[in-house]
Length: 130
Image (spheres, rainbow, N blue to C red):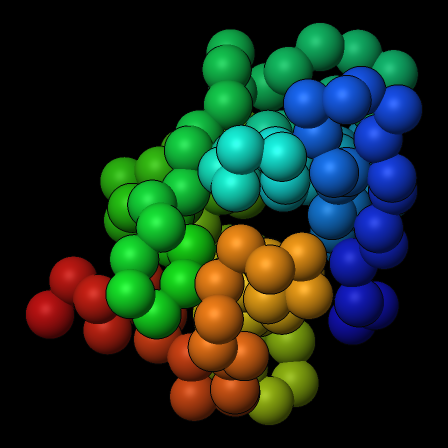
């Protein structure tokens, strides 16, 4: 599973976009947008088309990094046409959600949004909901 790509933004309000390329063969684009205001939102687009979610989902900034609420993660899975349970599971991760959150938080750390570098034991939404 490829690591997401980083695309700098020309918009002065944004640092850029972390693009997850795993769904491009299905003509879907999943990305996390990093705002200069230290906020992160998630969007799903049809490649060359409109947003699939109808809007963006904001990630909560918690003590251990940015997280999508479990309901929002299911919306992402549905927008990708798979449902959250049908997403691929990358090696070394418990779920695609774990991979996604880890990569988002690595970029958030790199940009100075959070102060603790995430490890592979980074909490998943399942652990947060217990």
